[in-house]
Length: 147
Image 1 (cartoon, one colour):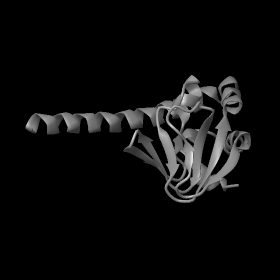
Image 2 (cartoon, helix red, strand yellow):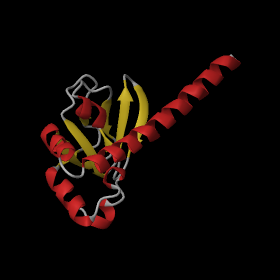
Image 3 (cartoon, helix red, strand yellow):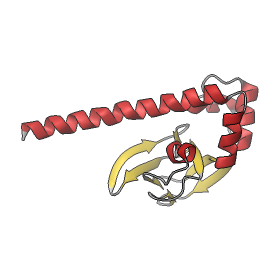
């Protein structure tokens, strides 16, 4: 498994002490994917939240690339938290090692004493993505006005 110093970089683990990080990480399952592997497809059930430990994952809606997740970034949280189908496809760009948290493990996190901090961290991740999305929309609208 990864050293605590490296795991502290994960935004979803901000604000947790060493013992809490170790307990959270112990809930996850390490999984490996080869470059080009599809981790999940748009429309699949959202059964896992992933934390990239090593590698790069690209996120697509249809054939449009919308994001890249690198070391210690999380993805797959929306469908897992809302128990809805995936809104995007995740594909390994490089060989990837992730920590996968299943629905039960996420539910345990949300029922435990670390729930508020964990949810605040997820909100921070989603807020950053929303800011990026808003900038893309604004740029797209500006481009359309110029045409």
